[in-house]
Length: 204
Image 1 (tube, one colour):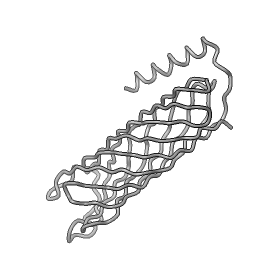
Image 2: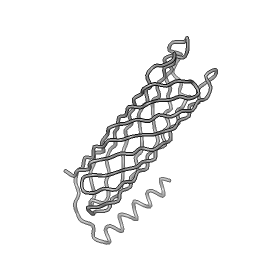
Image 3: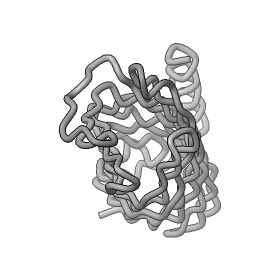
Image 4: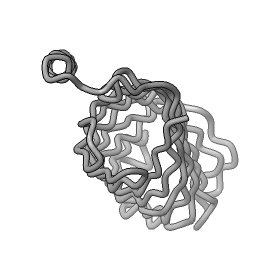
C-alpha cells in the first residue's frame, strides 16, 4: 500500500511540473471539525474473552505544515474526539475521549476547485472510555494510518477518511470486583472506520 501511494505521489508531482503548476507555496494551517464512526475488536484475556463494539462521535483537529508548488503538502495531523463507546459483548456503554497524532502527506490540484488526497500515519494516541457497569479500561499506544480524499473550494474542504488503527497497550482499571487488574501489552483494540470532516485550509 505504501509503495503504491509513493508511486502516486511521484506521478502527480511529475504531471504538475510538466503542465506548469503555479509556484505558490509556503506554510499552511488547516483546522477541521470531524465526525467518526468506527467498529472495533478487543482480544481480552480469560475470563473476559474477546469482544466487539463500536464508537462514534464528534471531534476537532488541525493539520499544519507547508506546500510545495501548491500541489504537494506535508505536515502534521493532530485531533481530539468525544465518543459514545459501546462494547456489545461486555454490555459496557459509556462516554469516551481520544486523540491521535502523526505526519501527513498529500496532493491537491492547484485550482480554486480542487480534488485532494492524503495519507496520515498515526504514530500515537489513546481511547479512554469512562467507567461503567463495574468496568473501566483505557487503550494506549495507538498506531496505524488514514487514507483521505476531499473536495476543496478556496478555503473550505469536505473530506472523507478511512482509518485502520491498533492500540497496543490496555489498562484495566476495574473489571467486576477487581480494582486495577493490571496493564496488558498483549491486549489490543483494533479499530477500522470512517471519518467525515469539514476543514478550513489556509496558506500563510
